[in-house]
Length: 213
Image (cartoon, rainbow, N blue to C red; front, side):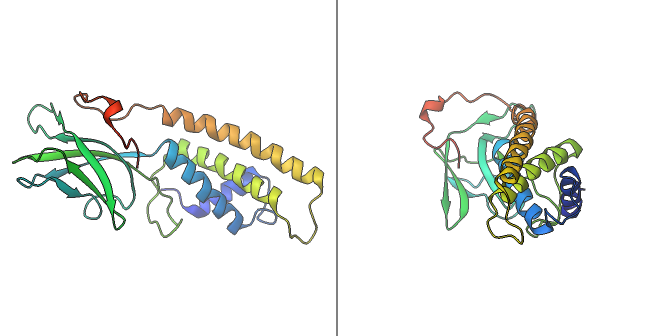
């Protein structure tokens, strides 16, 4: 489990800084921005089994065993406990008072629903999170992204003890572009990983009016 403090130290080390130019506050903000990009491109995949309530169409997915922030619903299936031949179900998704719901187009009478979704990575110590979900390679990708955003922040700073020269601004911008390129290469690898799948949906994607939350 990699702590935020470790990510900050590694980012500062990669920028050849001891915290003088790239402060803890600056790097923390940069980590937050890089993590946002990571979650938009290569989020975590999860699944939960929810017991069917006879004749009920609407199910709340906030709270309980679900993660704090679900980014998107991948599929809702009628769970097959015996052969794993789960049956895709047609559904819609919506928010009510910041709570996420799915609504089946046809209610089920019994059994369980298998709900697959994506949710956010977290870093222990960032925004009150207590768990880090990334592996070692993903940590390095996050550090690359944090370096890019830290350089951008440094380049756009206006009020400093010693005003930046144009050459310094240009240097930070060039460094930010290099780090961002490396960051995006790393993200692409994880973004291209196949999503979990059971039996393929028979509905056309053209019928889905809301492909992402």
